[in-house]
Length: 131
Image (tube, rainbow, N blue to C red; front, side, top):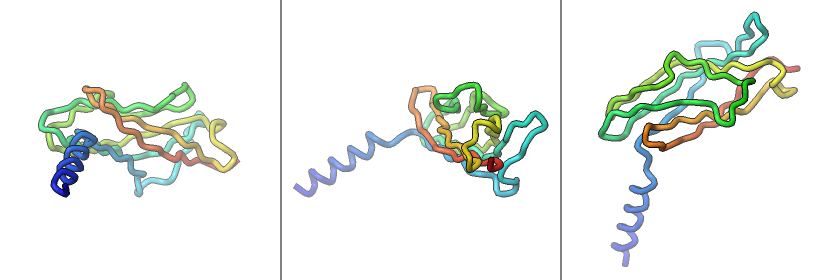
């Protein structure tokens, strides 16, 4: 009975395991936000994609439920990560100052999607000046 439970748990964890992982880390070296000359607020992050599969993968990163008010600025649109490797890339989130709440913050969700339609989401807190 214990053996059946063990193998069932093992099988379950194998099935829910994704072939990749991603993190979005705020850049510690930069200021919390920058206000551009056009009035937009920019936050800098480091995107880290980890390919846990045995095959090379191409990933796409985008903002969930994105309207024109929030933009992802990244050097690459399609990110090719070799099997078993980790890929780091700087990204910026840019938005109009008016979209920030009174406390100068806005929550957004970033989505990473593999070419096989596996998706993971991360919630980011965008910081800007208080109103």
